Length: 173
Image (cartoon, rainbow, N blue to C red; front, side):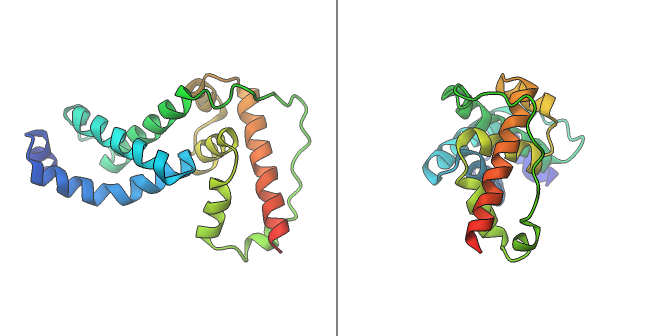
């Protein structure tokens, strides 16, 4: 990998193509998760690779290269979503009731692809916060900072997204 990265940094097009081919499938899946549709995801994928190749010199070699790449693509997707002000019409839920999970047994019957399709069908704000919190492991503070919202809004978006997912799972039965 180090040799491939060194060649990419020198502008070797074959090496860049090889790196693109190895990363594109995973990063496209990440982009679809955030954007919700293939067309928007393809735009973010392209923008992410432009950023990746322009910032390749800044990768220090410490930590996981794939983790570094993943962060670039998450940030690119968030910038794209931020441009459209995805959470402009959201309201905070101050004292939201906890979600009671009746869906756990139904969840056992759902495959990964079907579950991810359900996540992709969530409204943009719910889907974004769900992805950042549940899948990427961001804290509500980090989500709030990244999206320019309050932590309470982040929590309410997650709660509403989970509730919608549970409803989808129940209706699937």
